[in-house]
Image 1: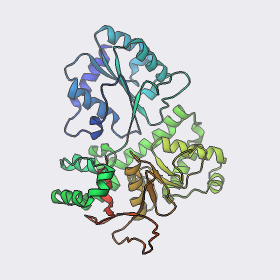
Image 2: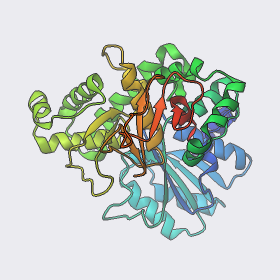
Image 3: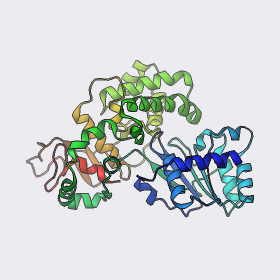
Image 4: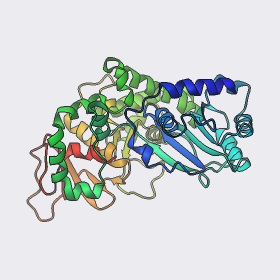
Length: 397
C-alpha cells in the first residue's frame, strides 16, 4: 500500500491548479458515494487530482488510486479499503474502475461495510451502474463529464474568467451577454480553432499530435472498452470502425439500416446495438423524434459525431461547415438538456424551443406558422431577438 501512497503523492505534486473545470464546483463532494462517468480524454483523472490538491493536499485521510495499478494483481479493492480504514483513512478516490473485475460489487461491499468511508470513483461512459449483483444506482450520485465547452476552452487558453450561463438566460439576455464577451475578445477569432482542436483537454500536450491522440482514444474504445464492457467480439472491431467511418463521412447521417447492414455485413439488430454502443462510448450522438420510450433497437432519425474535433480526425474530406455547426449545437445542448427532432426545424430543446442552425444570413420564414422559433447563427458576433450567435451556445457549461 505504501507504493500506492507514494505514487499518489507524485501525481498530486504534478497536477496544476491553473485551470479547473467548472463541473468541479457542481459536484456534491459530501455524498458518501460519487460516480463520474465520461469518455476517454475528457479529464476525469485531472478533476479528481485537482479536487484532492485543493482540499486534501496534506491530509493523510485521503487517497487516490487507479485500479489499473499492478498492485491489484495480487490485492483486492476490499483489502485496500480495509487497510486504509485501519490507518485512519476516510476519503478514497478510485480511478479507472472499469479496468477492475467485478468493480461494482466490491464498491458496494466497501460502501456497506465501512459507513465512515467516502468513495468517489470514475470510469468509462460505458459503465453500468445498475446490474443484478450490485445495484449502485440507489447508493451513488452519478455525474457525466464531457469535453471542454467553448467557454472552458477560452478560459483555459486565454486566461479569461467567463462564467457559464443558463439556457433561459441565454435566450432572454443573449444580446447583452454577447456584447460583454466581445468587449474582452473576438469570439469568432477562436471558434474555428475550437471546432477543430479544442474539445479534449490534452490539446495542451501539443496540437501537432492532437488528432493522433484522438485516434488512439477511438481505437482504445472500440478495441478494448467495447469488448470488455459490452462483450463485443474483438473480431467485429473492424466492422464498428467501418460503421463509424460511414457516419463520419455523411454526418449528420440519416441512417438506412438495411443498406448499412448489407454494406458492413451484419444484421439489423447487431447494427442498432453497435450504434447504441457508439453513443454510450461518447463517439456519436443520436437524434430521435420522441424524447421518451426510446430503446436501443429503435432507429435514430439522425446521427452526428459526438463532437466536431472527431470530424477532423478521420481520413475523410474536409468537413462541411453546416455539418460542423449542427454537430457543435447538438454537442453543447445535449450535455444538460433534452434534444429531439421537431416536426419543423433542426432541433427541439426540452420539448419547447425549436431551432434552425445556419449561417449569418439565415432568416425566419415569412409565414406566421413558421418552421422554427429560434435561429442559432454562425459568423455573427452578436444576435438580435430570436437570432442567437452559434458560438454563445458554447457558454452553457
